[in-house]
Every structure is written in C-alpha cells, then in structure tokens.
Length: 335
Ligand code: NAI
Image (tube, rainbow, N blue to C red):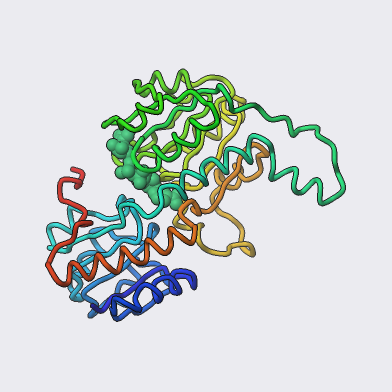
C-alpha cells in the first residue's frame, strides 16, 4: 500500500526500510508533523502513518478523507491523539502497535528514578570537573519503600517486576487488576489510598478523560511529604502547575518525567538555539531534583524494530482482509 509516513527521523526510516524489505509497501517519508498545515502532503495516500505528537483531530481527518485516506497506522500504543469518534464517522480505520516493548518504557522509568535518587546526573558533571564532594548527593534505599503503580497493564506490570526485585512493597490501582501483579504481592487499593501510602508514585495508565490531571493539587494534598512522582505515560496525566507548586514546598521531593502535557511543541526536535516559551517547563528544568527526558522511554533498538514490523504488518493485514487484529476498536471511543 502507498503510505505517507509523518514525523520520521533517520532512525525511523532505517527501521521501517529494514522491515519493509519483506513486506513491500510504498513508503513516502515526511519529516514534518501531521497537522492542519501539512495534511495536504497526504493527498492520494490510502494510508497515513503517524507518531505520538502528530495531530489527528476531526479537521485533519476530514482533510485526509477528502484526499483518499482510509487507514491511519499509529506507530504507538497510545491513541489519545486521534479523534476516534470523527474517524469512525468518516469511515477511517485506525490501527496501532499495542505492545512493542513494555520493558523499554518500564526500564526507562526506573532509570529516571535511580538517577534522581542517587543524583547520577549531578555526580557525572561534578566528577568531570574534579569535584568529588558528596554534599547534596544523599540518596535513599529503595528496599522496603512503597511504590504505587497507577495502571498495571503491560508497562505497569513490567515496572512492578523490577520494583519487586528491588524489594519494594507494591501498591496498585487499575480499573482491571492484573493477576500477574497480584502474584508478585501487589496490593490493589483505591487511588486515594495509593496516594496516601506510596513513597514513589509511577504512572502507567493511558490518557483518557478519567486520567486527565490525575495528579493535581487535590491528589498532591493527599500524598506523603517527600513523595517521588514518575510519569512515563502521557504528560496530561499531570497538572504541571500543581506539581511545580508541590516541588517548591518540598511536598514532592523528586520528579521524573519522560512526557509533558505541552510536549508537542518541544520534544523530538533540537531547540537548543531557541528560547523555551513554556515557563512552567523552563522552571522545572532549573530544579536539581527534577529529571526530564524527551519522550525516549520507547527508544530502544528492539522497540523500534517491533514498532516498524508491527506497523507495516498491520497495514498489510488491513490491505488483505479489510481489518486487523490491532484495530483500535470503536468501544475505545470516548464520549
Ligand atoms: P496497557 O493498555 O497494557 O495498560 C494500561 C493500563 O491502564 C490497563 O491495565 C488499563 O486497565 C489501565 N487504565 C485505564 N484507565 C485507567 C484509569 N482511569 N485508572 C487506572 N488505570 C487505568 O498499556 P501499556 O502498554 O502498559 O502503556 C501504558 C501507557 O504508557 C500508554 O497508554 C502510553 O500512554 C504510555 N506509553 C509511553 C511510552 C513512552 O515512550 N514514554 C511508550 C509506550 C506507551
């Protein structure tokens, strides 16, 4: 099938090209993000392939439909950036990559925590300048601490396994508790109870109307003083203003983010010669106890290989059968 592939970096192209050797689609790569200004590039392509910060709202979908597109192939698990209701009304199908490496994201979450805890990012710079002082580098033992995992699907479960290995107590909150997590000793509890009891809170739920700003001033109010918050799911699970306030008072002792609500204007680009306009984000960057990465949780060779292969196979299956096992089903449409 002819596929317009948006938001492609050289690494995407090399993995997609390798996977396509045996599949044989006609791939046209665009570096641009898909949005209302770039949608014309997709004219005449029956399939459009997008990543997490492409804009796939009702307006863009309408334009895509007019240009002959009937399939959106997501190179991601999350589909919160697609207006599924509009897609369904227009008869555009959406396929995704439900699992490419939950371990990649879980391991990155723990990498953020470990760096924040033992201040590896600060120690690295200090030692390179010949400063071997330990002042300010005091960490904590993870063993015995309580980790609250919100969303215990594939990534949450992989994270639980790692924290279990550290000897942490596991608390979980999910609409559908996971037996494998229970077998590791996870105690499922109400969200407020998790907020009250956890030393470390890590978010692995999708962005939905229910999870939007799950971490806000009210929930922070319930948390232990000195709580650590990690978010590698979607930025809008966190109200960044509220978290900033919590960091200033010391209520939140550490914050590790791989995602940010307004990341669409920032992440995946080199903006080092520009002035960041988002003052909340810029303030977060000044804090020694905040570690932010630019949505790289997924970024391992294995995950890129799986994303490329599954994406192209989804399109092939759809081309041959008119459906796909990885179709984003209409019951996932919110509202
Ligand atoms: P999954 O679908 O396996 O698990 C999500 C879990 O969240 C499910 O168990 C579901 O029941 C639960 N959930 C849904 N609504 C909830 C709510 N209101 N409250 C509590 N739990 C709720 O998804 P997976 O693969 O574990 O991914 C989780 C999220 O991680 C994705 O939705 C995506 O946003 C994010 N992600 C981030 C990546 C990164 O590079 N940083 C890469 C891949 C995914």
